[in-house]
Length: 96
Image 1 (tube, rainbow, N blue to C red):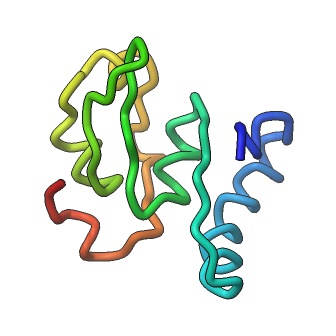
Image 2: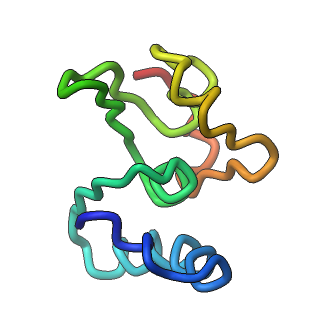
């Protein structure tokens, strides 16, 4: 999916981020989402792949990628601060 929530207004975007993981589990499908929106990526992902200039910088759980960011430049440009929440649960703090 290419930036599936991009054109939604903020309230609908937040609702879709909350509903997406349950829908994915219910359908039993794997989904690859390409987005520039860290809240979207980190909010729905089990794993994230950080890419810069066409090169993979890091692959990890959302929480690990946020806290142990291999390339801190994206975080300084788009801070997630208190809004960061992951749907992955307690195991999200595991490493790559």
